[in-house]
Image 1 (spheres, helix red, strand yellow):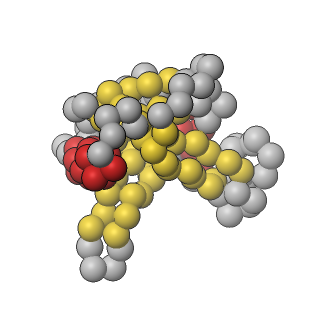
Image 2 (spheres, rainbow, N blue to C red):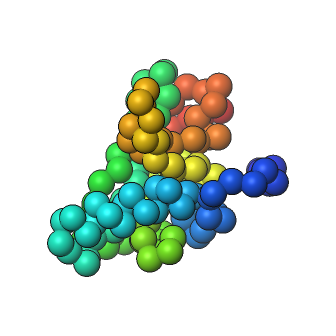
Image 3 (cartoon, rainbow, N blue to C red):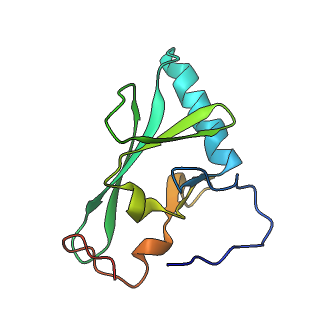
Length: 124
């Protein structure tokens, strides 16, 4: 499977070993949240679960654990961890942070979830 390279200029950091892209805005927000926790052992863990035919359910949380098969990427000092089962579903996904009047929070743009049913493990 090949993926088209996007040449548009964005604030996104290039894709890392996790296959996930964390934008600069999101990295700054994650770094700030970790600093508020007062800990230096936390990383942002991203996982996916089938979410019925409406798409994927994402889990984003801070985690100090290291699991067997974890894929870790560093975005300007922010470590992003994806477990080995979730990694194929998150390849090429962009994590951003929106801070607008109509939306606030982390957003995930995942090309693997477009026009698909997430029942079971199939995304095709």
